[in-house]
Length: 339
Image 1: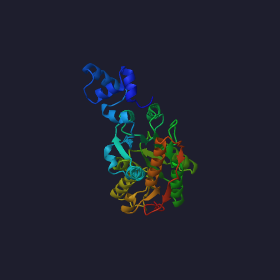
Image 2: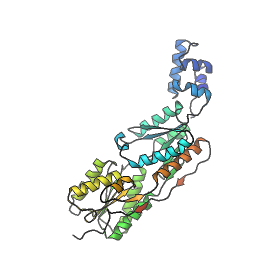
Image 3: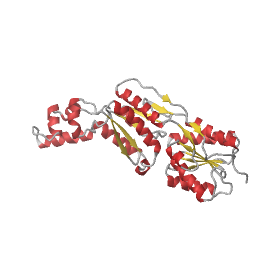
C-alpha cells in the first residue's frame, strides 16, 4: 500500500484528476453529489482534502514526524527526549526539514497518526521510539511504505532499520561496579515493563545478579515519572532487608529516589548508593551528584536523523548499534555502611 495520490482517487471514483482537484479544493466544476463521493473516497483512502495541492505537485513535505506514547507531562521534565530531539534538530535544520511532534495515548492511536500524516503528505518519514514485542506499529509502517527509523532494540522490525545501544552491557557494568564497592543487596527501579529496552535491562539485571550470587536482587516497575519513582523507592526502603544500592532506569526517578532516601533519614551514599540512567544535568545539580550511565543522547538523535534522511532519499539503510553507555562515578555511590 503506497501513499494515495490524486490519480488513485480519480481511478477509484471513475473521474478525471482535474475533477478530484476541484472536489477536494471546493472549486466549481463538479456536481455536489460527485464532490461528496470524491471526498468520501479520499477520506476512506487516508487522503485529506488539504493535501491536494501538494499531491498534485509531487512536492516533498520537508518534515519528519515523531509520535510519543507517553504522558504529555513527562516531556517537560524528561531530559532524554529533549536531548534526542536536539540531536534530530541539528541534522534536520541543516537540510531545511521540520520536526512534527504528537503525543498519543496508545500504540494504536500512533498508527492512526502515521496513516493521517502519510495520507495528507504532512511528513516524508518518521522516527519510532519505545519498541515493543510484536509491535503493532511495524506492520502498519511497512504497509504504508512510510520511511522510518526505529530508535531502540534490537527487535523484530522487519525491513525498518534500527538504531540501538547495548543496554544489557551497561546494566552489567553498573551491577559489577556496585558489587566491587561491597554491595550485596542491589535493587532496580525499572521503566515501563512493556517496552523492549526495559525488558532487555530487566533480563540483564536478573542474569548478572544471579551469576554473582546476589539472590536478593529485585526489580520494581515504574513509569519514568518522579512520583512513581519515589513510591517505588519507598516500597524498597521499608522492607526489613532494604537494598544498599538502587539503579534507576532514568534520571528523573533517581532524583526522586534521592529525595525519598533523605526524607527517610538515610545518608546517600553511606546508607544507600544510587545509579541513574541516563546521565543529564539533573544528575550533577543535586547533592550528592548522582553516579550515572552516560552516553551522548544528542549525538544518538543526530545519527538517527541522518539515517532517516537517507531512507527518505531512497538510499539503503542498515541496522546500527551505537556504543554502550559508560559509568560515570560521582558522589552518590560508595561502599555500604556496616549495619
